[in-house]
Length: 321
Image (cartoon, rainbow, N blue to C red; front, top):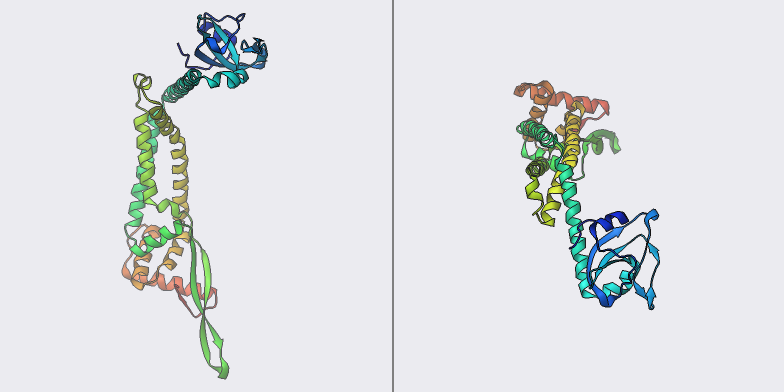
């Protein structure tokens, strides 16, 4: 019989190994089977019973293996002696791997059982999924009125280029007293919260919550026969709920930052073509005003924003580079 849990006290070893005999000496020639692995505290040290240099080792130790002799008696073998003597035996190596596998399975089953004992788990996952669905719906509604050029620009910002710059024209005196214009780059700021606009990331988060919801329905009868890989997958999916919640909180905060009026206004200066600029501005005004603006309102707002920016920097003109 192989024990699937690490024994933490000598009492546990005695309970699992009724034929434990602390008076016997263990020789590798008498090896029959490794029964269990133990790890004791400093107060529970036991003497190693391995035969070493013709006599019993006797060294007190805290971790090692309980091994069965051919006559059925079980002895303590310390980790050091096992490493020096038993690991040369193919049968011991196979037994050790088998015990390690059983220990891993037992620990995974215990952790999964504890995770599934949370009575609020399914309700928590459902609440997160509902919040995510509302966030997705809101972002789709925001992006509905955006031109493709703006969507591409925001995707580029999400990859690490959120800076918004324009070119301002300044009048300078040339030779002969003539006035010429020179264009200079001017940084307006950085668009924040663009990660909230990534619908692919939101769909991936939705898939992770769906996987967690499925794992939350695992029953006790499903746990025991499950493979190590399946147990690990279920545990990972359940553990991911906390990460998903943190990610969702961050996305909701990012959206709030993105929708700030000063942030939305920066988007107007990220597209070049006049048609794209008007579409972008119309979408921005929808968010700022809570209504569909007329074409006249859009053109007037664009002219005011441009004039205000030029006046603030004493520039003659402005363009998107």
